[in-house]
Every structure is written in C-alpha cells, then in structure tokens.
Amino acid sequence: MTRDVDGHGAAHGRAPDVVPRTVPRLFETVAARAGDRTAVLFEDTAVSYAELNAAANRLARWLIDRGVGPDRAVAVSAPKSEDLITVLLAVLKAGGAYLALDPAYPSERLAHMVAQVRPVLLLHTSKDAELATPGTDMPRIVINDPDVRAEWETRPGHDVTDAERHAPLRPDHLMYIVFTSGSTGRPKGVAVTHGGVAGLVAGQREQIGTGPGDRVLQWASISFDAAFWDISLALMSGATLVMAAADDLLPGQPLRDTLIERRVTHATLPPVALSVTDADDVLPGGTLVSTGDAVSPSLVRTWAEDRRMFNGYGPTEVTVGSSIGRISDPDNIGIGRPFPGSAVRVLDERLSPVGSGEEGELYLAGPGLARGYLNHPGLTATRFVADPAGPPGSRMYRSGDRGRCRADGELFFTGRVDSQVKVRGFRIELGEIEARLAAHPAVDLACVVVEGDIATARIMGYVTTSTGTGADGAELRRYVARSLPEHMVPSTVVVLDRFPTDPNGKVDRAALTAARAGHPAAEAAASGDIDLCELVRRILGVPRVRPQDNFFELGGHSVLATMLARQIRKEFDVVIPMRSIFEATTLAELADLVDAARQG
Image 1 (cartoon, one colour):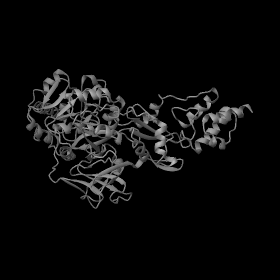
Image 2 (cartoon, helix red, strand yellow; image 1 turned 135 degrees about the vertical axis):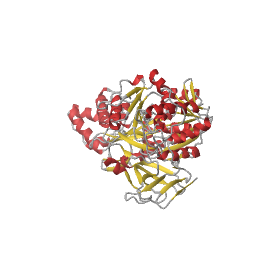
Image 3 (cartoon, one colour; image 1 turned 90 degrees about the vertical axis):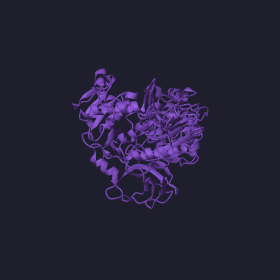
Image 4 (cartoon, helix red, strand yellow; image 1 turned 30 degrees about the horizontal axis):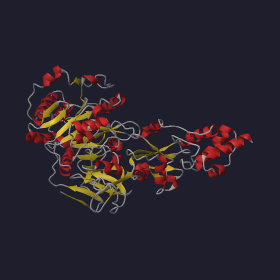
C-alpha cells in the first residue's frame, strides 16, 4: 500500500484491495482459520474462536426472533467478561447495532443515552437491574439468567445468513452508537456504520501486525469507541483478547500487574494512564499504542524503550481512528498516516488546501465517517460537510483539530481550533502553551485551562512529572517564560500526582480546579503578612503563596494588580499606590507597606 499527498492538501491511505465488509463477515473469516486458538481470555476462562463464534451465532438467532435486525439498536449493559464479547458479536450478527452502556457510568447519563437511542431491547446482567429507562417500554432481558441462557443455547451454532435476518446486512448499516461530550453539557450520540471497519482492520494489520500468539488488552470502557479498536485488533487477526475486571485496569499498580500477569503483548492506553503506571517489566518487546490525548516526549522516552510505540488519532465521528504511525523521534511526534481508503485534508477557512507543512484544520474523509449525530440533523449538517475533492455526494468531517501534513504524508496534530481563547485582550492558543510545557524533560502530561471571569481570567497550567525529577511549578513556569510572551505564560503551574479522568480515560479538564484544591494553601513566616498572602492566593487562584514570593512571578498582571489594590483598600482600609505593588520585590515587602500605612 502506498500513501501520498495530493493536490487537495490531503494525506491518503491508498488501498484498492480494501473492500467494505461487515463485522460478522470479517470475524467469521478469521474464526474459520483460528478454530481452537484462544479468542478471549478472562480470569480463568479461555474461549476459543470456534466456541465464541458458535455462542454468538446461537444468541444472534434468538435476538432475530425478538425483532433485532439492520439499523435497529440493542442496549447492552454488562461488566467486562467473555460474555460481554459474545453479546456484542451476537447483536452484530443479528444485523443490529449495539449501544454499550458501561455499568460504571452515572445512571443519569445512561438513562439519557437510552432515551435518545430508544433501543428495541436492553440486554443486561442481574447486577444492572436498577438501570433507569424513563419513557421507554423496551423489553429488558437478563443475559446471565440460567433459563434465558438455556433457551438461546438450543439454537444452531453455524454462521447466520442474510436469509435468516430481517433484511440483508450491508456495510452501510449501523454498527454501534457511541456518545460523546456535547458543548451543551448533554452527550450526543454518534451513529457509526460497518463501512469503515475493513480499512481499520487493514491499517491495524499493516502497521501493528497482530496475529496468533499475541495478547491484546481490552482496556477502554465499552461505552467508548476505543473499545472496538481493542476488539478488532485481536479478533480480526487471530490474536487473544485479554479481558479483566474494571478494578484490575485502574492506571497505576493494578494496570501494571494485569499487563504482567496476563502476559499482554499489545495495549492501547491514553497518556494519562501511562503517566502513572511504572513501565518496568511491562510489555517487554511488545507494542504500545497511545491515543486519546497528545503524548509527551517524556512519556515516549519512558515507554518506547524495548517496545514498538505508535501514536493514533481519530475522533468519535469516524470508525475509531483516522491515522496511526510509529513514533521514531520523541521530539517530533506525528499522528502517522491515514488508514487505507481514508484521507485527512488540511484546509484553510475557505476550505482550500494549505501548502505542505502549513497549518490548517483537519477534515476527515473516507468510508469510516459516521452517519452523523443521532437526532441532531442541524449539528450533523454543520460538522459533516460536502467533500469538494471527493466523488459526488461524498462528505468530510470537520474535526475542529488543527494540524499540518509533511511532504511525505506524515500528519502532525497542533491543537484545537476552539482552544483559542482571549485573555486580557490577547488571543491565545492553549495548545501552544501545553506543547511548551510538555517539552520540558520532566513533564509527562500537560493541560492548560483558563479560570476566572473576564476581569480575573488567568491561564493555569497543570502537569504531572516523571518520578524523581523534582521539578516544581515555579521552575516549569520559568521554563515556558523563556519561549512564550508574558501574556501566554501561565499564572501558575500546578504539579499533580495524577490527572482526574473522565470515564473514557481522557483528562477531565473541568475537574482540574478541584484537584488543585487538595494542595497546600498559603504559607507565611510572620503574622504581619499572613492576611496579605491569603488575599493574593484568592486573587490569583494559586495553591500556595509565601511571603518571599513575587506577585507577578506568581502570575499577577496589571489587571490583577488593580484588583489587589482594591482588595487591600477593602480589607485593610488603606490605600497602596499601584506603583508600590509593581515595585515590591516580595509580598513580605508589600506587607510591610500595608502595615506601615495602617499604623500611620
């Protein structure tokens, strides 16, 4: 397969031999070859490909009798186990699309998902009996009920045919519905078809090359599209899919123990999980795929040693991913090249191609595009737009990501279009600040957010650092100040032990402020400056303020200095000239001026 850049500013994955196929067809081809090889491993249970295929076929026929068919959704709520994989395959074999409900998700979110999709069935375990489904009358079936299981196990185990389904299953039929965060605060459903799976599997085969004897960890939440990546990486190649209980997959020691004890050879993990997990003795000689967030040079240096390490890219609005590439240089981390049959276009505001190496917005094209957002035709129309470089009727997805394409077709992610903010009248790209923080040798992960209102808006940096580096927030702030203008330097940089994450394993940026609250507050060496330090801490929103600190080195600026002067007048009933605030080298010096004014 060759990949290149065309005159439309697009990196292509060219693969004329990739014919769209449905998941059942792809899996059944592999299962026929793999036979007795282990398909799924969960705790002490090993299920062969032949056993898994037969069990899914039996359940699929039982589901067909209950109305499941093409473009009909089935809600599935079950903990990770070999049975979960059987159920998902059975839904697809019946022709249906699955809506996976992670039992760990908040009940309100799950209820919203069900209400939006309105599945024809809910398959759940006895542990999920309390799942609320207001306003729906869909049948609920307990899949681990012995009587229910005994009923479907009487069905034939050979592959289901189109003649048995309610209608022939085609690649353009729905495969799954995944919910992603919405700007309104309510998650929105993304409807994904089978159409992009063949290209995804071809890309996995060429880039990663899993096969018999390999063990692939199923880490991602089943409600996240990355879970399908794990499943296809194993079950579409003849490898073994390693399942584990949710508690055994928690980043840190539990995840490390699982990787070692289950002898995992391939894992796909987000940077936030890598940053808190010890790399020693994990995946020796194996393969690691980083995805979900930008991976830092420090994490690459830690994890790429004695392993193949890849970086993947792709929003929920495509079939799991758009591109992938092996990381060869920790200081020049790209997102690879498109999957076979797909294209990533780098376009300007007028949808015109940018030049080689120039930045633009990433537009994704190819068979892997989702149908759109469930029940949101207006939003679908604004994000899934006509592809001027494609055949009539073709579309491309406006990702909202910025990037560039090198002359050889290698893609690079450079930030979010909507991460540009305005602080103190300056337009600032938060991704640029994150990149500078992440470039520090000690930094594993970096996130930058804006906190406060219009008057108090301040840039806050959050990082996790490599063990034993001893780097603190002040040092990191000085580091970025050497290359960024003053208005882009974070007011403070907070070093956290670990980042808060959302259910999908991504950094939960909204929870960063709460994570900072656990850090030490103000420090003072003498009673005369304690109140002033606390006042400054509140204004700047920093975790710790000491008498020897400088107001502006903590992140103060002219607007905040004005607020400080106003608060000093309110709290201490004295007027301190603005010039004094600018000239004071330390807060202790400023506190002496306040004390003198109070006594005078």
